[in-house]
Amino acid sequence: MLMKSSAQTLAEQLATRFAHRIRDRLLAPGARLPSVRQCAQQQGVSPSTVVGAYDQLLAQGLVEARKNRGFFVRESAVTPGRSAPPASADVQAGTSVASSQPGGHRAPLNATALIRGMFDGISDKPQPGLGVLPPSWLENAFLTTAVRRSCSAETLNSISLQYGEPLGDAALRRALATKLASISVHAAPSQIMTTVGATHALDIVSRTLLRAGDYVMVEEPGWAIEFARLDALGMRILPVPRRAEGPDLDVMARYCEAHRPKLFVSVSVYHNPTGYCISPASAYQVLQLANRNDFHVVEDDTYSHFAPAHSIRLCALDGLQRTIYVGGFAKVLAPNWRVGYLAAPPGLVERLLDTKLLSTLTTPALLERALAWCIDQGQLRRHAERIRSRLDAARNRSVKLALAHGCTFAAEPVGLFGWVETGTDTDALSQRMLDEGYLLAPGALFHAERTPSSLMRINFATTQEPHFWDTLQRLRA
Image (cartoon, rainbow, N blue to C red; front, side, top):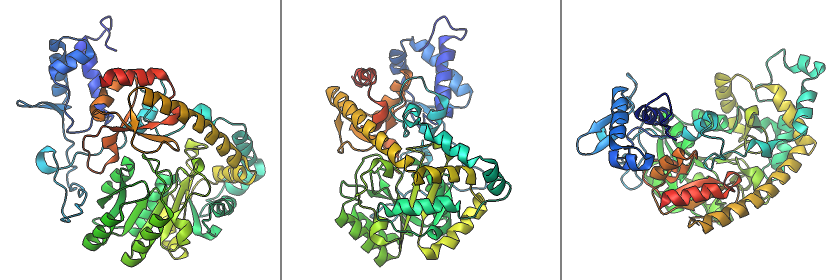
């Protein structure tokens, strides 16, 4: 809130607020700032104060004025010597999608804004847009025991004074093989490789199987980090509409005919952000399409700990022949341990391992050994059961509040996330909510080409307070 008693003038405070959002990508390059009159009404200040703030942003080189159009966040310049990454490919014509941004280039995705929000501490309020559980939900007694056992003098000497096994700690890979078998994904420990989180596993797969300019199919809506990560590697993104039963197979077939994609990345169970789970029929047809058109399928099962064990997995149906399984523990257990893993066809393991060796050499065995103990002793399973029970109760409360405040759900509320219809542009709404201390996840963030959306993703664990919904309803009006 702007304070008249502050050492800074109101214009300086307002300029500082916008500058922080621009630098943290909460306002993406190319985004239009509110008009002077609109901003003055929103912030409760005079138009001259807003003009003074915008003048400061102009002087700092953060915004530019466009005649008769207003003030816009300046586009990020392309690094000298490096061409702009290819834009997403159009399914009908096989050409780049035309951009609405000046100069014909797509504005960089605001992919890291929510991640930065986790560290910047927008406010002390529960944050509806974040993708993790509150720390209080993850607290338990067994992690300390697991780490203590791994840090015994004998263990420290045996695994800390030399590089670990390239594939990862053998005890953890054995435990993961057993864990995967419980969801009908059968992989020998030699097919499993540990990584520095699930995102690292996805990156290893991309860098191993793809080269700059290759086409990759990714579900849309989907997680912006995946779009941005592939974009940064120079891949051509083919967005596949995600339906309740699975990806749009007709679109995938047309992509295969026009572009011969090398990879399809799917969150088949509790898809982010919709919560959809793939149907058996759709899963079978995806695998048929992959076999006919010679592409691999990466199944990102990040939310497996929230899902029923009987949920359909592509890797289970395929038997890890053309599929690669990716998992991790940041969502349910210990985000800062950064332990992820992948399970792959035997013929791909050595190639994937070469990529891992080039990026991280090995992974820290101490925490991997501690995690193996948590799995073997049943601690992880019991902890996940408690989380699921608590999440069910939170989801019920959040859904009731959302409906009572005039929102609806574009998909059945399940898992960690809700895909909420607000009836207004959530990009604009997110900026207003930031003034109230809330970080939203607007729907535009989940599309390869950022376009206005009235949808937003909420975290059921952090949207149980009426105050958030009261604020949202007031600002929507």
